[in-house]
Image (cartoon, rainbow, N blue to C red; front, side):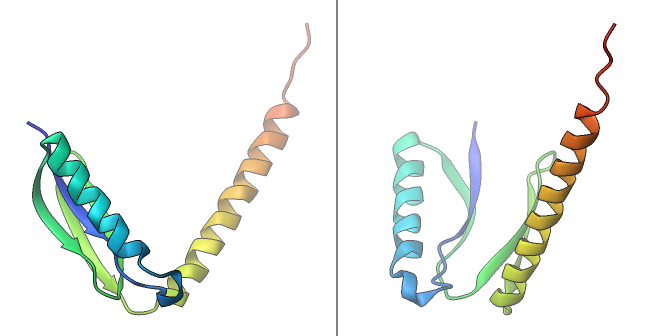
Length: 100
């Protein structure tokens, strides 16, 4: 039997309107409609969440984030590192072509 844990829907950026509330409404309606039991939830509020999930055990850990701008900076830095790694991998992979 499938079960879930739901996190999110915070109004982190007030200028974006009611996106968080709409996300909450969607996911709760979807889960009810699909008959999926929710065993844990943390929804709404004004703080961002950082979630860690261990799929083999089903364990989840939530930390509320006070410094949203700091998270944004971390995400940008991570995206840059990933893009650079992809460029490097593509360049190295393309230089390893062997013709015979």
